[in-house]
Amino acid sequence: MGLIEELQKERGRLEKAKKWMESSKKGTKNYKKNEREWSLQCSTMNGKNRYYLYDGESEKKYLSQKECNIIRDLSQSEYEKRLKKCVDQELVRLIRLQNCIMKNSIDDVYEKMHPGKQKYIQPVEPSKYQIFEDWKNSNYQGKGFAPDAVEIYSNNGERVRSKSEKILADMFLSKGIPYKYECPLELRDRRIVYPDFTFWDIENQREIYWEHDGRMDDPEYAEKAVRKIDGYVQSGILLGEQLIITYETSGYPLNGRVVEILVEKHLLGRCNL
Image 1 (cartoon, rainbow, N blue to C red):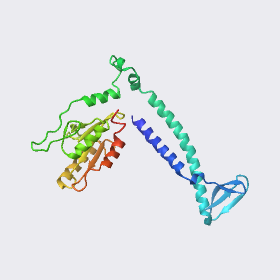
Image 2 (image 1 turned 180 degrees about the vertical axis):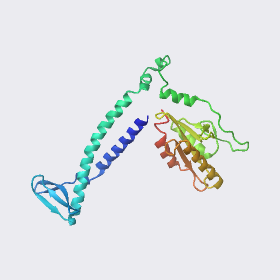
Image 3 (image 1 turned 120 degrees about the horizontal axis):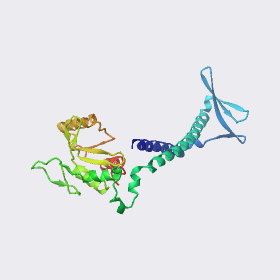
Image 4 (image 1 turned 135 degrees about the vertical axis):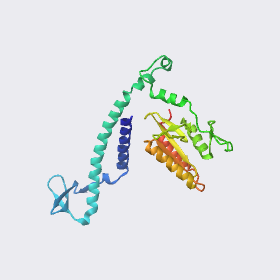
């Protein structure tokens, strides 16, 4: 799973470079004179760079620093032409490797069989989708509520502690992302914490935790929140990988756009089928 994720990151990096080149106009600039196309040559003499236009045969024309716009355009053009060739070659190799790895997944053997046959089959090991289903259906005991606590329920039917948590829960439900609310988690120091939301990352076979810190302008609350985050980090649960955090204060409510960005980045396509 780690290899596939790294390949996907590298492919995204290459495709980003390709889009950048397509939007750049400098890479298409050429210098033409007397029906000939000239390239840029550079040499170093006595520690100083000298630039020349070269026609590809024998003629050279010295470029002074006053003609730096020509030097800049042709340097950039040469860079982008070389970059395009490299990116195109790397993308072809990377896509072939990705296809080879994904095509040979042992999970696919079971998943591609007819559902009517699957129920009679005992696979060599549970598929990632079976593990996902088992995770969704497993029972757990969450935290209790104080007798005088306000009753707020999500559209999924579970009781939550705040209107912001209801907003989050309802968004996850609307996007088809299964979650567990306040499912207990034992940290490395044996301390039990209750993440606000827990998800299952199907591809990487691990849980992702979402904490919403809703009273960050309360010094005592903020200190507890920071201590809790440190506990996650010390247990190897890192922000941006397995830990997502949202926040608000009495004067700055939960930002829905930020939530959308985090869901798209970390959950969609990874924590739902």
